[in-house]
Length: 312
View (cartoon, rainbow, N blue to C red):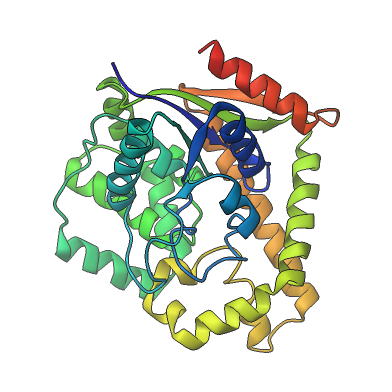
C-alpha cells in the first residue's frame, strides 16, 4: 500500500505554510517544501521562506539544499522529496508536502514519469539561442500554439520550463499536457490527500499578496537582491534571474524605476502568477479545494483540512 501523505497547495500568499504548520503540529507531521525557489540558500525574503520560529516548531525539509548558482531540476526535486518522505514515514511521522510549484508536486505524486530521459543538446542549444535572439515571449507563444494548457500554467519568464515543454513536444511527439495525463494513468506514488486553498473572493487573495510584498520590502528584499547580484547569482542562474520577487527589484537597483514602481510591478507579477497557479491546481483531478472566505478563521481552516484528511 502506498504511503499516506498530505499535500497543501494553492496560490502564493494563500496561507499554505501556516496551514501546513498547524496540521503538522496537530497530526504529528513534518513538512516537505514544494517550492522551486526555496531550495536555494540565501534567497530568503523573496521566496517567503519559513521564519526561524516556524522552522524551530516543526522539522522542514528541502529548504536551503543548494547554492543559488547551481542548477536544480524537477527530477532532482523528486529524488530528494521521495527520500525525505520515506525518512519521515520511517520515524512514524506524517509527511506534509507544502508549496505552490505545481510541476514539482505533480511529478512527485506520479508513480511514473514518462518524460524523455535524454536531452537533445542540439535542440536545447537551438531553443536557448532563439530565446537570446527573440526573447521569452516568442517561445511562450510557440508553446501556447502547441500546448495551450501547459502554456497557461507557466509564466513566460520561466524560460527553462517553457523550453522543456517545447522539447517534450518535439522529441516525444506529444504535448507535455498529454504526457502528464498518460503518466497519471500509471497510478500515483502516494496515498495523497491533496488540498488546495481556493479563495471564494479573489480580491481577498490579492489583498494578501499586496500586503506580503509590502512586508518583503520592509524586511529587506532590496538589500537581499543587491547581495545576490553582487554574488553573480543572476548571471549564473537563469531561473534565479527570472524569479518573481527579484527580477522586479533589479530595475530599481539600476535606477530605472522608483521603489514604489518596483513594488507595484512585483504585486502585479505576483497576482498574475497566482492566477496561473489557480488554473493549474483547479484542473488537477487529485486536488480537493479547501474554500477560504472572508469569514474563514485559521481555526476553521485547520478543522476542515484535518477532517478532509481523516475522511480521506
